[in-house]
Amino acid sequence: MKGIIFTEFLTMVEQAHGLDMVDTIIEKSDLPSKGAYTTVGTYHHTEIVALVTNLGEETSTDLDTLLYTFGVYLFSSLAKAHPEFVDITTEPLDFLEQVETYIHVEVRKLYPEADLPTFRCSRPDARNQLHMLYISNKHMEDVCEGLIVGCMQHFGADHTIKREQTDEGELFIITCNE
Ligand code: HEM
Image 1 (cartoon, rainbow, N blue to C red):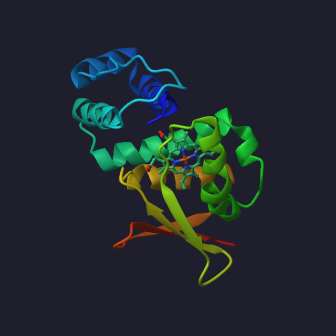
Image 2: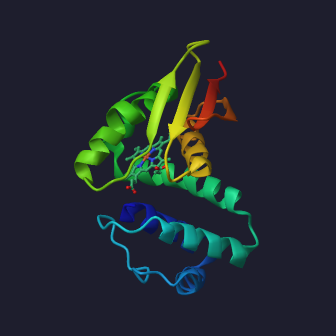
C-alpha cells in the first residue's frame, strides 16, 4: 500500500488526538517500517490494519467508524495532492464513474506498485443514481464509503448512499437528490 495512505492517516490522527497518540499507536503496532513512511514508498497493507486497530483500542472507537472517518478525510487529502483529477468535472457521479476508467489509471502510472481496487459502474435506473460495485481483496468497504462521502461533500452534493453485499463485492448505490 502506498505511503500517501499512511502519511495521511497519521496526519489525521495527529490533528484529532495529538502527536503522542501517533507515537503510541506506532509503538503498539510493532511495524516492520517502524512507522517511518514516505509518500512514495510502498508498505504492507497489514500495517494500516495494525495502526487502525490500535487507534480503535486507544480511543475506544469501533473500527468501521474509524475506517469510514479516515475515508472522508482521505478524499480531501487526495484531492489536494492531485487537484488535476478532481478538476475534470463538476458532476460528482461523473467523477466517481471515472475513478476506475481515468483516475486510478493515472494513479497507476504515477505509482506503478499501487494495488488498486476494481470498480464496475452503471446507471441502470436513473441518471442521478450510480451503482458502483467495489471489488478488492483488501476489503476496505468502510474506507470506500468514506471516500464516496468525501467526494459528495467536495462537490457539495446532497445525496444518499445504500450499501448491499453481493457475491462479487460491495455494491454502493449513490443517489444525488435534485
Ligand atoms: C483524487 C482522487 C483519487 C486519487 C488520487 C486516488 C489515489 C489512490 C491511491 C494512491 C491509492 C493507494 C493504492 C495503494 O496503496 O497501493 C488508492 C486506493 C484506493 N482508492 Fe483511490 N484515489 C482517488 C479517488 C478515489 C475515490 C473517489 C474512491 C472511491 C470511490 C477511491 C477508492 C479507493 C479505495 C477503496 C482504495 C484502497 C485500496 C483497495 O480497496 O483495494 N479512490 N487510491
